[in-house]
Amino acid sequence: MSNKQANIIVVCGGSGSGKSAWVKKQIARARRLLVWDVNDEYAGLRITNRRDLISAVKGNKTKSFKIRYVPSVVTAEEFSFFCDVAFIAGNLVVVAEETADVTSPSKAPPGWGKVVRRGRHQRLTVYGITQRPAESDKTIIGNATLIHCCMLKRAEDRKYMAREMGISIDEVDRLKPLEWVEVTDRGQKKTGKLRF
Image 1 (cartoon, rainbow, N blue to C red):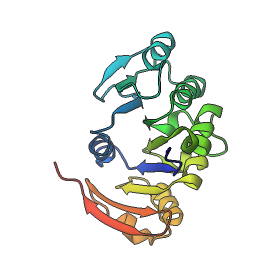
Image 2 (cartoon, one colour):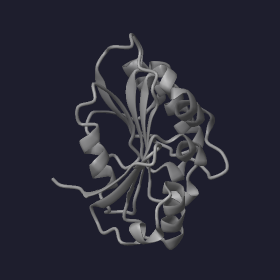
Image 3 (cartoon, helix red, strand yellow):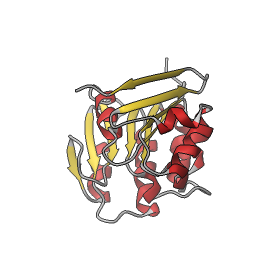
Image 4 (tube, rainbow, N blue to C red):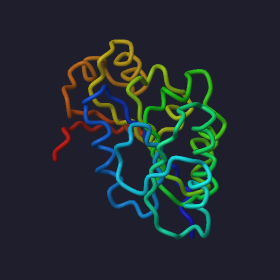
């Protein structure tokens, strides 16, 4: 029986806020993991070109792997290709770092849009990570099952996230490094601090 429930997590926070460290804790036990790793900071097999990425993930839907794709060029087209590979592979955790670099508020690249809107049919768990949520695509925000917000440096981003999460701006303004507030798509709110 396949799990068709969406699991789409938006993670935002300024540099040094703890957002990527939080994600790394969440994905530590993932059996099948594919990371858009533009900062070259995740664990796993490091791949830098399309051919090797396709070769590493093709095959059956149960083979275990932890792959980080460190693209030689960071473009919306390259990101869309990465997302297409993730979508076809299915049954995995997809992490996309720095989505504001490869998406825009008005439109998600085709592959990313497919992963976010239809990924549940492929049994994808998706983490979209950004320092600039107001500059990232709205597709993931609109489909998120969880929004995890760390400290944000810009007032525009803090206001945007408070509005999207349905919480007061004060709750976002008060966040310090490693602190977070998160809201589920059912309106359940939780706060905490990242511990190592």
